[in-house]
Length: 144
Image (cartoon, rainbow, N blue to C red; front, side, top):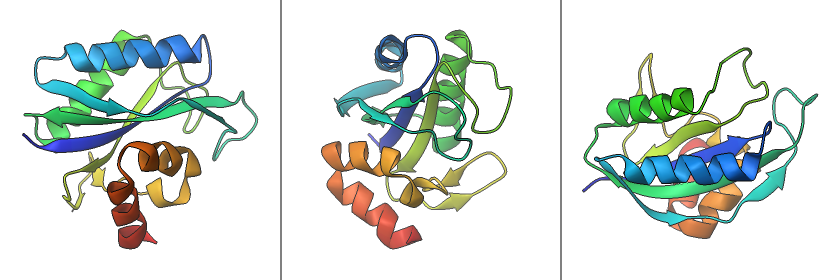
């Protein structure tokens, strides 16, 4: 079964509870199995910095879904949890990004793999290194 790595973050509401809820929802999906998750770290906002700090983590999942279908499953979970997209890099109840899917490289209008900014974001790389250092290294080598 293919493996993918996700980055999760939240900075409004109860971020720790929302991350836990997102992990539960991911694992409850019939085509997704969470096999590892990092600890939660607190980080300053990136991109748009005039907002509360984020709680961030990473997860390794196994899935029967193709990359774009996994993206749709993550977006469905965000929407079901109440995420509304008001502004780019703005505050959010939950964010679930696909950082990498196997060693697939793709650039489509829906999905770019590996995630285009992952190599620039310690809040992505640090939790990812905790659960999959080889994937974090591959992303940095590929994009850096």
